[in-house]
Image (cartoon, rainbow, N blue to C red; front, side, top):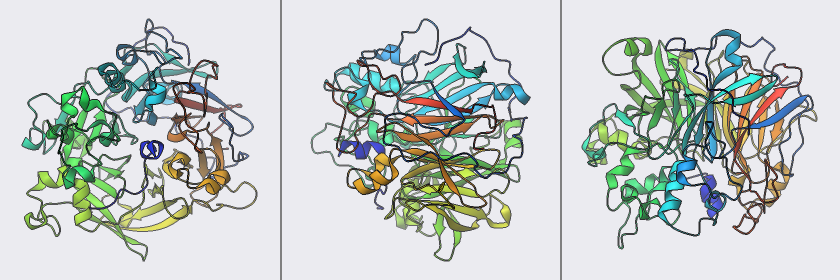
Length: 592
């Protein structure tokens, strides 16, 4: 069994805007692709980099303005209760408000052309929570009401947003909604209806994830890397299996404790329920009536990263879990699959895992039953077993073990793929690779280290030092955005923490390798997600967990503001996750 490298935020921490008029958006077919490309300005960052920050606030370069949108608890419709600074909101109220633990997000334009850069949907993941900040009593009472509120606070938020008078605002719309641990879902692919996922009840629940991607046909993908936090058991004498331990599942000492009040999250009572989580989840943001679909052909990875490309018309999805890099190559061209009556674009295909050679060459190993390492003698009964235990399958075939790979990104012109590795002796690095024959469906690739954390990248005073990179985003103009979560460094790296300051968002030039610090976040936060408008004139950035424990200082029920009070700085309030919207004061391209 491979070790879990790169502790996540929860593991480390345990040791808005006005609403407008209700409007129904005009929809334009089944594939809303950006029709307005950003002007060709090159990918080199030309802004003045911001310094390392330790203050409790958000800093952006001169000539830029940052505003907060969709903070935790903001109502999604008129008539919904406003968020209470003492965190006394109920589960019913939380289910109609923006969730907490902001992570991955995508911007989905609602119109073609120029209007697509001003009107769209934000699809926002919620993958993590701090009970001390979420509950009025700091989570001290292990009650059914506490569990219900937590179940309503994770998942996904879909919100319509619009740029008017130079500011983005949330618009009250029938497309606005929450997907939570109680939302109906659908299982598709080879394990749909399989005995390993059978519990006697319909599949229910989306628990959110860091991964975020958009398909060529206009839907959004996320993962469920919060899997290990929501299951447990109080059954005396119960022991986790090796497969359960590989997914971080255990009795529940470090979980949220939902199993005490919701039987389906009790591993001893219903072990198959956990098999229904950890898949890639597809959401149609334009259809509130469509249940989220969990794609079993893509493997149960509980992954924290996703990026979509194409190979000869077939969808290719890059993914990562805490130790490995994966690639799913669909069987059929997506247009053909969507127009037919058979399986969907992501219901058939081959899941691969990466092996990186020391010579800079790499191989994508197919996770197919019967291949070396995946036979009955190796402990895998059939292909369904391989997909259900995909992390173990990756271990068994000899995939390269990485230390906390994050969210990948694909360069829109060169096809180069980038991915972070959060942990390591020097605080992490950014990897890049190019597929054989520039085909994302290839089985061979060449890889290299693009940037190393803790080392100034680039020339001159703008060169930035960073640590704990958690993911990357590549805009249509080719600029690479690297986000960090320095809380993952823990309290044992005080020297490094002093050097890199608060978590940050950095901008890199793929051609020269220059890296500049673009944004710094408040104390205790992680920069968990980024998305761009089609015209590249707005950057949406998620700030996760401000006010969380840092530098041996932690929030308490008596003083939830001990670490941070961002963004409201209410003297009787508490910190809130939020989306930071960054625009250039002259309306120009972000990064220039």
